[in-house]
Image (tube, rainbow, N blue to C red; front, side, top):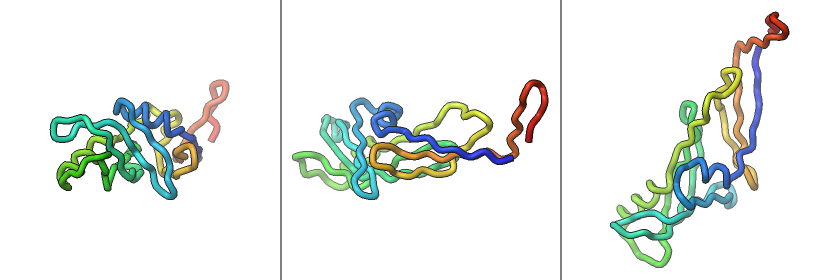
Length: 130
C-alpha cells in the first residue's frame, strides 16, 4: 500500500535547522530570500540572496543565488562566496514508515514538504494489514 503525507515546516524552523547562526528566511513571491551575517574576504558582512529549494535524495536543499552584500560593492567571486555561505541542506532524521521526501512547495509562512512510502505494511495487534 502507498502512504502519502505533507508537513509544513515554518521558515524560522528551517533557518534553525540550517546550522547557520542568525539565518533568516522569508518568502518573496515565488522564491525564498535568505539573509544573514557571513564571512567574505575575511570580514563579517550582512548578505542576502534568492534561495532555490529542491529535493536531492532525502535532503531538502536551499541553494542561494544572486547574493547581495549590504553597503559594499564586491566582485562577483566574493558574491558567490556569500551565496555559498547562505546555502545549506537539511537531512530529516529517520522518517517513519519508510517515508521519503518527494516534493517541496513554498507557502506564505512555511515550506510544505510532501512524502510517500510504497509497499507499506501496517500491523495491528500482531497481524499485518495491507
